[in-house]
Length: 482
Image 1: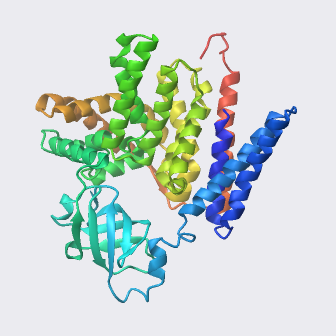
Image 2: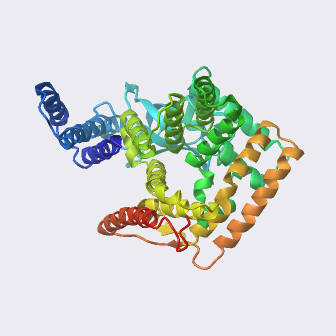
Image 3: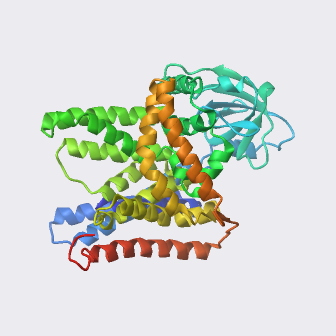
């Protein structure tokens, strides 16, 4: 797994670049180049050099690369960032003119619509940067799509973390209808309207839309709260579970192609097209992109007939995504996604020891929850004690839920609506029962940083202990595998 330490070093470098923004760029560049030159000199001299020394030099380079990448996107070092231009203004006493481009289709909240935007210009000065935009709920907002360019006439608040506008505060200056993202988003909205006009019960249709299209605008608040309190909120976020199920379904349908080279190439090509098409339809969220990258690397390795380590593939996906967008390291969804998968892959040798699918599901759920515990405590300040019960009961149904929801999305009619309605009704009853148990959610947890650090260390220790302990006990007292 040579890429795992490199990915960790890159993450440390990005964090260091964020915490110490005053370091000059030339220092990061020197720290990047010097280890690479040292490794090149050692290779040229041809002397016997320990492999650990080369690993240390590469880790130093990746650490410096992470710091340099973070500094390149840090507003504190970017003179062209829109917040720097806002700082030079006299204050929020007068309105400003901003040109922004929507990075996602606005999604409804209780009182407004939320979207992420890329700032193009500030008071007619070309600039860069991203922010969140909240729009008042009216009919004009429902027509906005990803790629649309808006001209905003608004006041900028002092924090400059978010922007707020009403219908008379902006105009649409350009609509994107030719790019790949715009075309995929248009198809996504058409499929969404097909599902909304179908006969499925509205309460369960919102869950089906979240599973298949990543659209949570129609998800009822009570249903969302039930899934959250039961500890299975990850089912409503398109991630590795959904992408893996889709890849397995495509692979199963094309199993008749065989394992010869030509059959592997055809099957793998179809899987890649389906995976990235699904990622585009669901909005290219960080968790979805991570899963698509991982499964793409797995599919390509199988097409080439090579065996690869899953942790190494996870590290490669992390390096690729952080190189393209270093700020993802601070995205909570990205953190939860990678930590959960890392926890599952770390305990995979122990999981393989069990024949019972029930025990496998329990260990997978335990590993993912333990791995994400530090992030959950630091971000959401709450835990769900009954997560293991909910995951054992409901997660095994995920493949059936996704398949029936996809079938209903393709052909919305009473026949295709009946199976997901019954399955979601069962999930509704289970999540409602679990969420109403005593102390289903323990909230109000605000640990100090040193507690988070100890929790992280304990998490690593528990995951390694689970793997080591279960790997040693390969046989029961009767001498048969578990």
